[in-house]
Image 1 (cartoon, protein in one colour):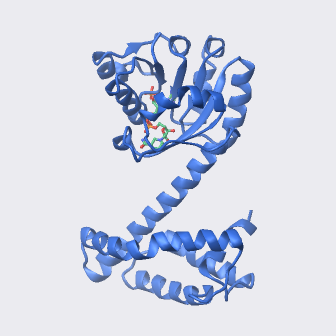
Image 2 (tube, protein in one colour):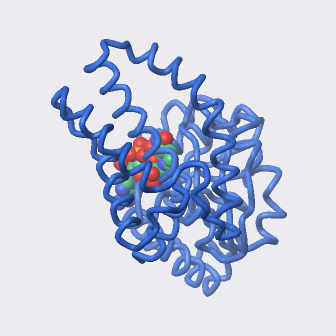
Image 3 (tube, protein in one colour):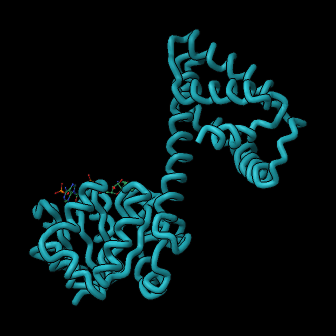
Length: 292
Ligand code: FVH
């Protein structure tokens, strides 16, 4: 037996396996394309000749595969479900939340425990104290394996017993980060094209300006949304909508098209149409929710 098995040795699965080895854990690995295991085997990992053998080799197995299709393909391999009896499976692949619910049902019927999770980090951040991995599903499995999982992410969190909870929050966090990153890229392109500012110089300005704006802004937004307190005493949606026209004009003047900014401006117009023009900017939460 080894401490943990890792199935899926792409960029992320390899980083997880390397982190376990660095922490002194014994590991078993399996990948559809065996070549990708070579460097891990040199460093002491054990190779499983099948996914079923990897499941049997450890009390807990992490799946780090591309998508839903890949997860279903691996769980359908000969002997896979049978091998998971009395084992814990953790699916860290990016899959749809509904996939967590169906996996949990399938794994429980097979006599296994199931955790679904999400990695809110890049491979270079695996193993750091501030790194966030989210988990949900069988609480007793998380309690049993939490110390081993903490090797990967010092700031791991168990977010609920509903199997899909972690994946949903994980996808929400990436939504925030990636649209913010695209917003940064759009702003940097405008500053470069319109003002000749280098991207590192823009980043330096962003850091100073956002240090003041962002943390306080998010706290204020969370409190307002929770209390549904949308008074426009600081700046109304009407004021922001007017500002968005100037922002879009700046891009037009230098021949650029910003998709995230365009979506933001359209959301403000929808807020005005629904009678929220005099409210605070974070009332766009209600516009997004009303469109569901
Ligand atoms: N890389 C990252 O930074 C992100 C951060 C956020 C979370 N993701 C998610 O982690 C999953 C794996 O991502 P990855 O970067 O390791 O992806 P790849 O390097 O492309 O490796 C994909 C592995 O999946 C295997 N695979 C694909 N299809 C199948 C299949 N039908 N049957 C069996 N295995 C399959 C693939 O095998 P192979 O091509 O080497 O044979 C790789 O092991 C992903 O959900 C990210 O969203 C990482």
